[in-house]
Length: 294
Image (cartoon, rainbow, N blue to C red):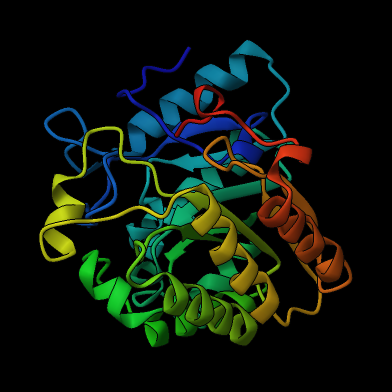
């Protein structure tokens, strides 16, 4: 029904959503770990409003019941407020059953939105943003060319929360390699404690197109932590987290160990699961290498 520019990515929790491709690719597209939006087919550009409207008309005419819409690709929130307002109004016009609009969001995307503009988008249905913080450690962020810092990520998360929009934050296990694993985990926990997001998920760094870019970022050789080291890093992260009511998920296909709970009430149980994986992995159900993926 919709003509997508492939490949198209979405968060696992958006599997029931209409994927509306309002941008193609990522406007930043410099992160050393990310191979998702490779050119030329994923060269960044914004889709025209009239094209988006025609797609929404086609969906409406199909009489499909749509209650959730995910704004793709990786950087829809880079669009100016006026364009995002138009898109939300079009969704409201043609898909009146939609109760949630969501999008990926880089922390920098929030810089050009005022608190009032974010509140307006929330009123129009934009209620959830997936924030790829990746790490709370400034050295890791600098090495991977994220273009963000602890402070810029926190400022964006606080601004989003103040507007009444929920944040689902992603932290990448293994992103600091073996060398920076401990500080990556500790400072990521520090960032989350300061931000108190509604949702937190962890994925393991996956480099399907090779390690060359990450090698360059880590003085010629990036050493991804092995399974035991990843468990140790997760143990540090969970132990340092002091969250009040954050839904936590570490169930992406890249993870060896599936973890689910609410932090903080389930913190001790989750820490115990990780300790069991560290001490007696043979007695724990873990994903095999062939079961893991991006």
